[in-house]
Amino acid sequence: MFRIQKEERWLVLVFVLISVFLHACCIYCFSGTFLQESIENGSVFYSQFHVSGYDPITYAVVTHWGTTYQVFRHPLLAFMVYPLFLLNNGLIALTGYNLVQFLLAAILLACNIYSVVFLYRILREIIGVRRYDAVLLTFLFYGFAHIMVASIVPDHFTVSMFLLLFALYLSGRWMREGRQMTILQTVILFVITAGITLSNGVKIFIDALFVNGKGFFRPKYLLFAVILPAGLMWAFANWEYRVYVRPQEKAHQAALAKKGEIARQRAYKTFMDTTSITNPEEKQRAFTILYKRQLKKEAEERWAKLHKGLPIKGKSIFLRWTDITTPRWDSMVENLFGESILLHQDYLLGDTLRDRPLIVTYRWWVCYVVEAIIVLLFLTGLWLGRKSRFLWLTFAGFAFDMVIHLVLGFGLNEVYIMASHWAFVIPIAMGYLLVHSSSWLRLLVASITLFLWLYNGILLVGYLLG
Image (cartoon, rainbow, N blue to C red; front, side, top):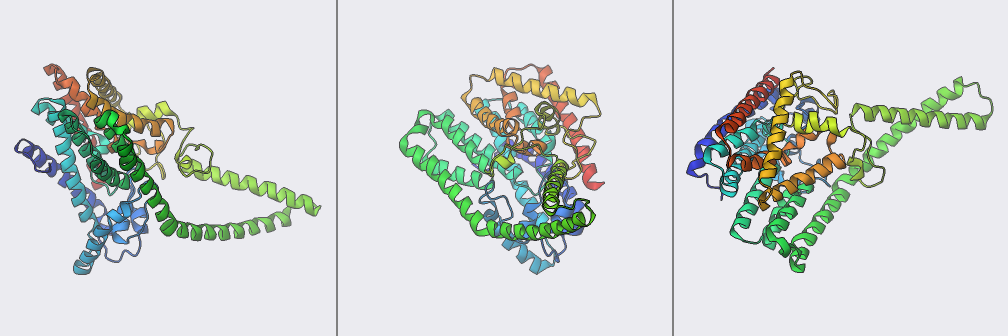
């Protein structure tokens, strides 16, 4: 399964050379600070690493281990990188340098290599496109802006993409061979993918539903492959939260409460010294109303700086991740199918939690033309492949992402950084278009691919080396 076939070797070699160059640029950009042995905590990574909305949490965890990730979204990720933490600290003791950038670059490089391999195999073996069309669509995919960027930053998206493509390839083979996804296979795939990102585990169940058909609903399979693993994963996340996260939250909340009480006392003294109200009860009532208004205004200002829409009201932690006010159409045009595929020149790779506006427009009209052509080719491929069960399997995972992003608003303010979870549906759908297409359409796809590599590559390298 993981042997690089003869047909794939030169393709892999080209991507290795490109990836090594991009990783070298990323390491060069931050090595002046991150190579230091004397990094005492992870704060230096958060203050110095600025590439779009990607988090340098893994840099921090591999340097100073802790359950820093959001445990209900990434329940096993901290424990998965623990061996890297041990290795990195051993290398620090031997060399005197923090080699975390090089360790993660090696992991990401391996994931990218096999993402290329499995996407190529899906196009060749499952869809049946010709060799050069599979190469073209693979290059098109890696020319997408936030596939190129995600492949070199220390976040989990590239690892998730590799696992999702691997699961898709396996599912396609099993469907083609008329095999079922066994309970053990489902559990292994679910634990690994959901352990990294919980929503990816849902896609394993979607894969299993399409592969097994009615067999998915057999009581034995439903209990041991779906309900029990999902329940245990959720129980583990709750345990992890109680043991590792909640004590830290309590300490943080106590510190904030103490700080807030000091600020309240100062505001109270200032109000009492300056107000013209003489009645003690009225003075107290007036201060309470005025101070609540001030706190509400400060909270709204902080929220506005984060460029986040208002969430659905409720106490659930999942509701806090929702967004019901961010404009959907503008987000689709400029971010979902915009920034995910083509970087914006203004606020290049800026972070919406820092300095990037929520909606940024392109300087050149040609960018909108390229985006529109890609979306049109994608939709045409969906129509032409509408009788393929494998395409519907792939599209179901994409539809799940669209529900959580566009309907519920999860991560909508920086939806482009999630492209690694869903963007491979575009070249897969286009594969059904190229199976029986003419040479002019291949020329169009090749022209767009070249444009993406030149446009995004120049902007990304310029940002890292500038």
